Length: 406
Image (cartoon, rainbow, N blue to C red; front, top):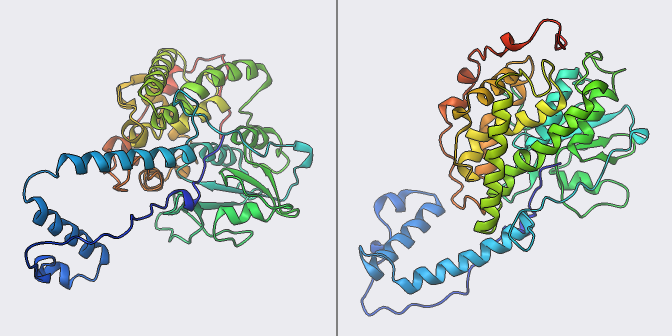
């Protein structure tokens, strides 16, 4: 799976044709701009003041007339549906249908000169960063980190690294492109589809190797051991593959994609189905984790990595923006401790840039948050809180599968 970007043309809202409003009274320009607005060089501030004062002039302290409210609501609903149809394609019931990845991995075509493109807000890209870090592939597979653009695209920008302990957006370190769309277009034959992350790039052939996250993490886990600093770490051992796949079949549709099905639902019916499946699955996993350190016993696997990247964003974003409001993750005793346990594995915390995650959702998904106002970060999502002892290591049983020491 992957995170999409929305073409800028889909986000443009065209202003209606200008109309002339004739008023019976003489209006002085001073009525529209107070001193602070006049002295402020911000055009947006002056524009807001103008709208505010015209509103007061037309209907005073009372609410706008009903016909205006109805008209604006109808126009906004129609515009929202158009934007959502591009951002989040749905079936006839209004349920979100995630587009399939365009480029699937062909291991025989992969070279040793690879480059990884990611976006920090994206949970699918986050999977690849974690497996890359745990396997010690940082030098073998360099990374370029795209940031969120105001038009919904993935853009490259040089962000000062104020905290060396976490990843931040960067310039395109291999192709020197301005945005991810340009990188995709470099491939032979070009590309006009959705520019998604994660994306694995063949540096020598200038070709997209893969943009399916699970293909990439499986490849990182076992396909580059000759380049990995931790070749002995196996996050998908043969004896656990069936169990991992069983968990993936439960977690992907109901949790990983389930939160998106809640947030991108375009009908009440679709939302109700999605939110019911989400929380019934979280309840089931929480019960399971009451007697098991990880999903498959005492050993961390790819299934845990895939679940973690959704859980770490739950109280931070999904609970509010995606309307996953029945419970906070903090209310799940086992799930929250399990999430902290994984967060505290060396190198994992460095892949979690919470401000970038919040900006990416609250400021990039314009149809869900038109004001682009980013709420304050919940205290339970801060590094200090997540670093509290999970005490889950005591659940590991002597003689059972023991996690490889990193």
